[in-house]
Image (cartoon, rainbow, N blue to C red):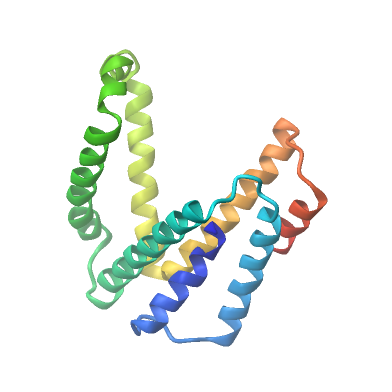
Length: 182
């Protein structure tokens, strides 16, 4: 289901007028999605509820990406302005989710103490996260949100290839063929 992300974004971008429908782009996206679907076919843990949740997550992610593209290209926001407007909302919603779902476990496992014992590691992780968000906005601003989605698909394929090469992960021929098509 996660493979439908570029298709969902493509339709949102064309429906909102942020991008025009190009048959060649659409066909390229379909090939990528079909390859990823072939690679994931036969997943033993499939449920319709899980598929629904993934679809909803991809839909909202696509809406967020389309909104970023609108602000960064149509309204000429800078990448800093994009971070300025999104970061507080992200902090509030993530904080609420943490409070509701993870706070008790974090207190029990002394999460704050872990941060205090490893400040450099957490600072580096935060800096890298900021860098990923900032460069993602740069890709959206200069190449479009669909390009970012396709790059994310390619990143996943490269990570799986690295897992095979480094950790000797085993993949079926069907999975390998699917990733090869993607």
